[in-house]
Every structure is written in C-alpha cells, then in structure tokens.
Length: 262
Image 1 (cartoon, one colour):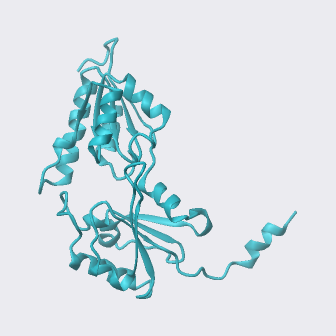
Image 2 (tube, one colour):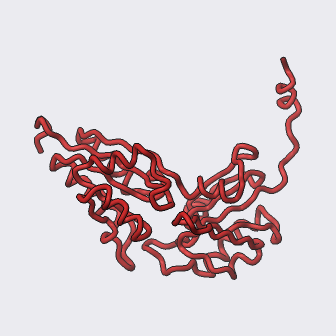
Image 3 (cartoon, helix red, strand yellow):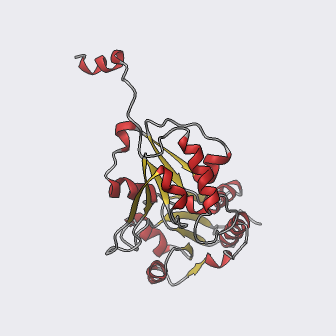
C-alpha cells in the first residue's frame, strides 16, 4: 500500500437518526452526497431509497447479516468492506441508523484501523434511540441522572448502578444472543433479568418497554408493565427497557446550601 500517493482515501462515519430523513443533520447529508463510495445499514427500505437518492454510488452492508451468523463476524465483514474502499483511494461515507457511535462495533473498528493506517477518519453524531426516549417519555436526564447499559453486558458483568437514578437497558430483545436473535427475547432470560432487577426494585415497580418511531407519521411504541410481569411480556428485538428511578435519597444539606451563597 502506497500512502505517498497524491490521492488518498478517507472515511467519514455518519448517523442518520431513527426516523427516515428527518433526523439527519445537514453535515451528514452533505457527507453522503459528496462521497465517492457510500456504504449503509438501514432498518427499513424507505431509508435505503432516501440514501440512494442522495448518492447513486451507495451500496448496502445488510447482506453481511445472516441467520445464526455471529454478530462479531458480521461486523468484521462490514469493517473490511469499508476499509477496502478507503485503501483503494476513495472518499468513503459509512452510514448507520441512529447514532453511529452507539452499539456499532463496525463503525468504531473501521475508524480505528483507518487512522492506524494513516487515513483521515472521523465520525459525525446522529440521534439515538435514547435521545428519542427522553423526548417521547418526557424525561429530563439532568434531574436525577441516568445510566445506560447494553442488556446482556448488564447481566454478564453484574454492573453496579444507582436505583435512585433512571436505568436504560439497550437491546433487551437480543438478551444473550450472539447472532441476530429469533424475533423476541426468551422468557427464561427475561426471568433472569427480572430477578436481577428485583434485588433493587419492588415487584410493582413500573417499567417501560420502548420502541422508537421509524417513520414521521408513526407513533412510538410505549408499553408500561410492572416488573413482576416483565417475563410474561413479548419483548421484540428493537425494544429498549426504561426503569424509572426509585425515590431519591435525602440530599446533603451542606451541598444544597452552596446554592444560597451569593
């Protein structure tokens, strides 16, 4: 590989948000339009059509997915396809839905390797499921704080958290799945998750199963159930679990008095 050529490849990884076209920033749209090669992963055909209208040199990475195929292998194939175009001297734009830096291993790996090999590479932010959740549920995360974990990692690593702050668990529908999953989370795995949460919350604590709206005229799916009923609830792959905080502990009055100081 000759890195002394006048023409060298580059990579920009962008996120188009969760709703077709409407969540993409002007910077992201411009990056897609001017790229010499675009790769994309989208959750629906409408987003695919929109990307192809912005740039006819766009091709999907969705064919890297396959039933029972380990996700790690899928992400490696995506990364390698992106980097091959960068190494060939092309100005490459890789498009992912949501925020490209949230639970997108291929995006981070491609940027790291491209930079290591001397290519320019950067990431542009996008609107994530979590951003939409705050808006749709009317939550201000700055009031009591919040914690986010990938659901399988949350259980496997026995993550410590504060039950008086909001808890968000991503990819609950893929709990314990090494591939693309079977459509809904297995009941026995939801039982394990519920048992772990029950050590910190009462059985009647109400939680929210949330799915973001993918189209402008659609409404998000918001289902509230008690923690005790979670194992008996159908939890599909796109679902995010939101656990509201328990009542906050007493505040340290020494700190609160600071607010009264001139």
